[in-house]
Length: 329
Image (tube, rainbow, N blue to C red):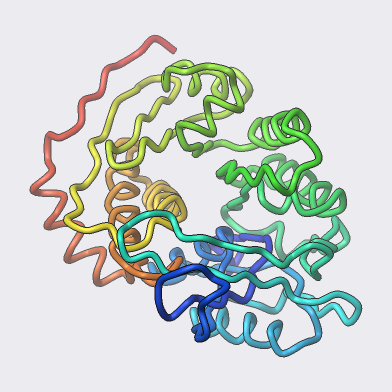
């Protein structure tokens, strides 16, 4: 049996977060952290006690060392992170938002080490993981990273492993919107659990209603779909059931970045613990709501003790807040 519960892959960047609000051009002090949707999810799952392997590339530079050391401190197995002597570690600048609005982010990742990921990085050990989580971000970085995404998802599904997929659209990284839609839907068709946001689902499928968006992916091979609706919660649909799970009220939104990653942490962790899809969405909503109450991309993700104590208390208060209706398979 594999010692790896979850395999995740992609790019982790160094992130310089402004110490005070205002235009990035006027900020003089920054705090160094790490950023990356894929590694946010990996960190969140590691905090919940799962064994998580991280597949990536970093440059042979100080930022690359900082990234790997930061991920290792979070409990990730970084033995599959390659050091690229020819290409740098990507980084980003992030503004500080004090009113709950989306922060300004500037990326410096073109030609980064992670953009040179390729199918050659896939090993037999990695393919023994119980579960694979993928997003659309690596596929947007380069043709070779896209080929790796497709091959890894294909081989994991063929091997009988579960696969989750969050589109995580990054339009600026694609040559065209048409290419993005085609390639993202091609990858989504390889996943068991598809986790788009409502706006993403509408763009990718051409449908407006969450039920129709979910049906689009169910018809293409998914076993279940959960559509993030922001503060309103989430809609889910499987071949046998569908329903709406209300969002968790939040008094103050501090930082919206990372909410979707928190949602994915909740979904994957609950489903791997054999909870129902409705129960998984409830946990996902709670972790997403917790993420927006902390400054930083992954600082609000809970550990197992926090999940056990705080979520169960919130879950009792929210009991009966969703409705589900059986559907004909």
